[in-house]
Image 1 (cartoon, rainbow, N blue to C red):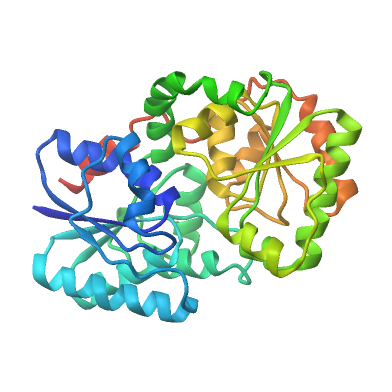
Image 2 (cartoon, rainbow, N blue to C red):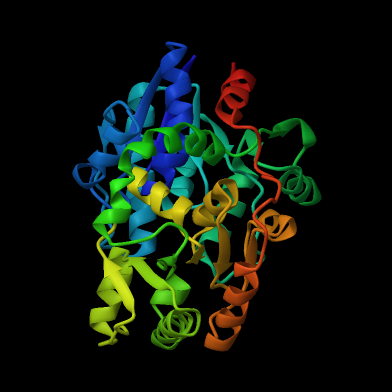
Length: 357
């Protein structure tokens, strides 16, 4: 059997890494495609090096400068060329990006079966491009690897045959469990940014609905300023390129109480996340990682496709109004971080590859 593993964004590199390790350790016939949806492979190289991953066999370099439709179309065409050349038996895609959708459609058109890793997530917000992507990929996949029983139930409610769906846990748990040990070597990152253990708030903001809207973006920054002043906590904001670009284009003044830094590598980020008193984010992956690492989380969105984090008490959905975000931060700072990890035992990749074989 020949397996294609396709990724295009940094979260996908992290979540696909356990599957790549599993395929390599079993000496399976597999190859790796990096679409370059957000960054070139050169900029992502440190992620491959830190996670000890092989270089991609194909680097498509589709880039992020085009419209979403053009980008998805380019992924379909370029992935399709690789599919026709390599003729894999199955293509594994992860999550809900344009890479996920484009690669899945290229596989269908090439007669290749599709395995969707992290299937069955739903926010029920059709204004989010990710929601459309994940629904379409779920309904065209041959194998759906659901991270939780909840996500499996949502797939069955939508009419997907139960024999196509397997609950595996989330590969993010595999990645965090393995890499947090490696990350211990990066403890100096706290000294680098003059931080004290559990005495700062980590922030990640990058989603289209937040940073492409000047009022929402300004509202989030105002909330962070209020949290810093009211709760006397340092705010550390590793800034996403999209957020940085829009701060310039909107002429937004970032409050002095928010310490903006360049994006960090993955191991440094794990240390920053595990040592933070609180994380404020709009990232689905960070909601999961915070839950696994037992760091309280406030999500500045109106919904989440990770309801399990809210159910176990690790996360609170706050929207973007400053007073609501401040209130949520105060509440989460009082939470005891003894919740149950709902995303599995760290063996998701083994279960996925076992089921494929």
